[in-house]
Length: 364
Ligand SMILES: C[S@@+](CC[C@H](N)C(=O)[O-])C[C@H]1O[C@@H](n2cnc3c(N)ncnc32)[C@H](O)[C@@H]1O
Ligand code: SF4
Image 1 (cartoon, protein in one colour):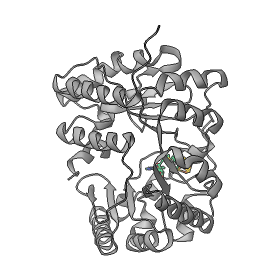
Image 2 (spheres, rainbow, N blue to C red):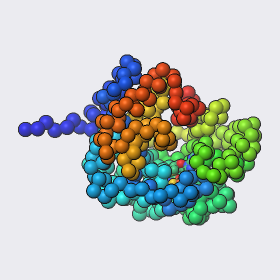
Image 3 (cartoon, rainbow, N blue to C red):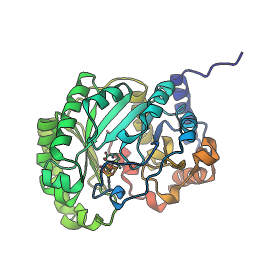
Image 4 (cartoon, helix red, strand yellow):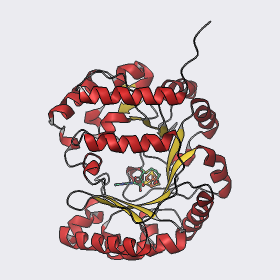
């Protein structure tokens, strides 16, 4: 008789303990597995946002149909939370393949969506599998929103987000609103807080630093257009309005602007995913300077290419999960080299100043 695999929660806990040991002993080959996984069956998007590489008409990449289940069966047994995106819209995933695999492997979703496809029916289908829901809405001003998020319609996305926030409240599912900080939205940050509370019913905002990923970067770059001081003052006014209105604010922007403020007691469901989130933050705080993503995150592109980072910089490529298998990627030479660099504080150029690396310093 073959021994059945240990229950998922046991594997998650023993993997986390193994990660603690690997970090404490500065090991290069790890018995732990990544609990956060980023993978989508394809790289499609319904929008062409001005700040996103999708606006430059990237070729669409899909995992070959006959490889999808095999790939998910390699990756999901270890994962706790899946972000089903590949610089793409997660609601365009092949849900017929994905949802049964989430159920089989007890994996929850971190769903970050542009909202345009989020009907009440889609939300109901996804709800049992979602751990964290995020809507990306960069402005409360129709002209700015539609300039950035073409061809989305502002009123339509607002209404879909509003209905979703109300439904998520009924099941204590946290909803965050993402905004990418660009030159155009800097003068309107306080009004954005009011829009999030009054029009969406949400209480959690994350401000993202604009990455240089399109030809429009210089025109959109808030710091290039307004300067550090003006942007810093606008962010401070935004923080003050969040305090007044009871909104949590996370500013994922380079020093000295990056910070996290808690002004709202967000209802939370306690499950494996929530516990893993908490333990991950605690671990990151106790190993400042070692990237939290490198500890427990794996990004796998639809063609199997793997990276230790959500940004997927080519210089941090780990290998290909479809061609080489998970273990060769997770403990291969590039990953061992990166771990060594992290232990020695000798960060690759692409990691220097990154908000993911800096964020644990702001956590209370
Ligand atoms: C790449 S998107 C994928 C998910 C989904 N399509 C969306 O827009 O929410 C993930 C997040 O990255 C943000 N994003 C897009 N382009 C960005 C850029 N150049 N710099 C920083 N964040 C960006 C989006 O606003 C979104 O919140
Ligand atoms: S930011 Fe999201 S919605 Fe916009 S083009 Fe990129 S992937 Fe699509």
